[in-house]
Each structure stands twice: as C-alpha cells, then as structure tokens.
Image (cartoon, rainbow, N blue to C red):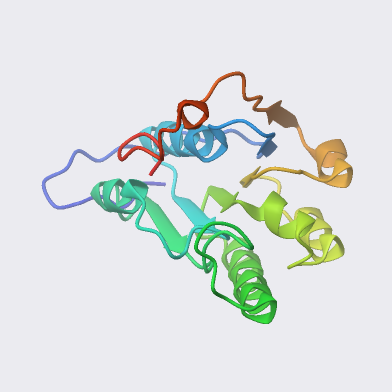
Length: 192
C-alpha cells in the first residue's frame, strides 16, 4: 500500500508490523505528548497514517498544530478538548468538558472502526478518565475493539491500573527538575 503524498514528493511504501501495540505515556513529569509526537514522526517516516485526538488542549494554540500541517495528510491532529480541566484559565462548566471528552472518544471509536489510520494517539485521555469526564469502562471497551494492526497511544497523567495492565509498553515520566520551580512560565517551542 502506498501512503498519500503531496505532489512532487517521493512516494514511500508503507512499512508495517503485523501487530499494533497499546502504548501508555503517563506520570507527573513533562514529555508525555512530546514522546507521542516523536513516535508519530517515526511512524510517518515508515509511511503510516497517524491521527492524534487531543482531549485536553483545545483552548491554547500549540505549535504541534502548525508542524503537523507540514506532515499532512499522513499526520493529523484534531483538538477536541476545551483546555485543561479545573486549572489555569478554565472557564468551562464540567458538563461542557464532559461533552467535549465524550465527543472526542466517539471520534476515536469512529476513526478506529473506519481503519483509515495505522496509529491513533489519544492525547491527555488518562487525565480525562481520572477527572471522570469519560467513564473508564468506555475506554476499556475501545481498547478491547482495537484492530490487531493498529497502534494505540494513550497519554496523560494518572493512567488507570486497568489500562496499564492491558498495555504492551508503559512509560512513566517523573519530574526531577522543572523551570517552573524557578518561576519561569511555559516556553514557546518547548512547552507549547
């Protein structure tokens, strides 16, 4: 199968493993989304189609939204959240966050069933589960329906043990030191 390419671009044959993995990036430290983005870059380099659905980062402008356009149509990011829940500048009702999270989960289910992508990244879904904006059972049902060849990546703090137990690869990011401890706010190009 040949990946979709831009006019004038070199055609790359899709290189695919027979088994998709369930991968979890969790923990209190920085780098969960960044790790998933790195994996997306690697997958696109193999001719895969990748979709990242963002469950929590909807209200800020993140640079990955711009850089992903350079890899389109092989890589696409769909921001669906309303921003981080109950922190920073959150002015949304819990019901609004819940509706957005459930819509993002429904999109993930639909895209998974359609079979258009080789990798599906559910960015910040672990925190959304922990905040009880989507039921854990609904996410476990999605995991149970994962096609064998699809790689599914879940990011965010507080990954539930039930998901960790099902995962093939789990990495926990641990904060040792952060510029915020020196009073430095989030940095463009580094944090967003």
